[in-house]
Image 1 (cartoon, rainbow, N blue to C red):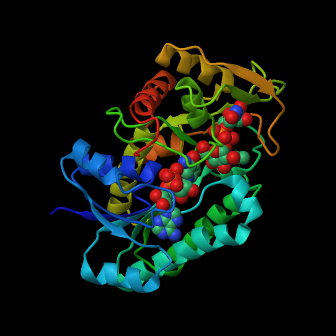
Image 2 (cartoon, rainbow, N blue to C red; image 1 turned 60 degrees about the vertical axis):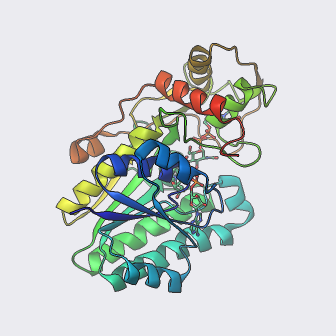
Image 3 (cartoon, rainbow, N blue to C red; image 1 turned 30 degrees about the vertical axis):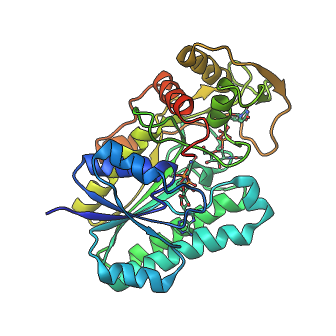
Length: 338
Ligand code: NAD
Ligand code: UD1
């Protein structure tokens, strides 16, 4: 029987790519999104890739009445919960907005699921729950010391879902801690388009390459890393999307809660990303070295072995592939979906 999956935040960057992976695995995604950080034109792009337009419900995950209606009108096998806010700086400036959206929103969703008897939930957590790690690769049982309200909002939800799992038999939950998702679907039809000046490296690099910004500022080259620049575990968003399908299958087949790192296990420095992007685009990328960014961790990457063993999944697309796909999307859509 075809399984319908409610995808909160499914119009966003990772959610839209996961809708593609769900559709190609035979699931039917239904998107709930308030469009606070996304564009409804993504739906037509999803149709072009998958052959059908996903059902779209415009609304907020914190709207109890709406969620009760959604779960009573339709039947879902499971929920993948992406909806949330993700800008670290904004979370420091307005923590209540982050706790309201990310924590309260998750509670409203889980309550509606409990009331409707839907007990399979995949949750978007983040490597940011580790804060500054003692060492890398980071295993899942490393200390969790998030350094900002965004990270704490993710950890609070993880802990609440652990309590829920312990309190009631039957829940099937996967808490997925993403490292640094980048790239785009290989069609170039969907990708990431941040509003305003990008905070993250890859969207900034894309905008420099396409000529929308003069140069990249590298935030420090005096870290204790091989070339002095920050090191991260970049993972292709389609690998991440496929990881969600694997986590969903695992959750459906095992009545348990799992907490898994979704990363590649390989670190790349800012300069390595710049060089890979230059290869992908055939353009040289102007950059300057600036000061360290406050709050930045010098280097971290995942120990992905538990996810690999549990899900029989691993991120296999290379950094070059991530850059090729980001560049294809950026060139074809310099203003996003507009
Ligand atoms: P995104 O902003 O592109 O997607 C989030 C989507 O959720 C958007 O479409 C937004 O409109 C929607 N949304 C936000 N609040 C909502 C609400 N209250 N009700 C309904 N819809 C709402 O972000 P993304 O990069 O796709 O991230 C998805 C999830 O993964 C987030 O929870 C984020 O915290 C988490 N995550 C992202 C990263 C990353 O680097 N992108 C890393 C780790 C974890
Ligand atoms: C950021 C978030 C983190 C989130 C992650 C997801 C912060 C403090 N942390 O982390 O919570 O989970 O994104 O992808 O925002 N860099 C530059 N120049 C730039 C932009 C970035 O040199 O213009 C460097 C950074 O210093 C860092 C690397 O590029 O070394 C990656 O930065 P970024 O993409 O912002 O990701 P994170 O710092 O890992």
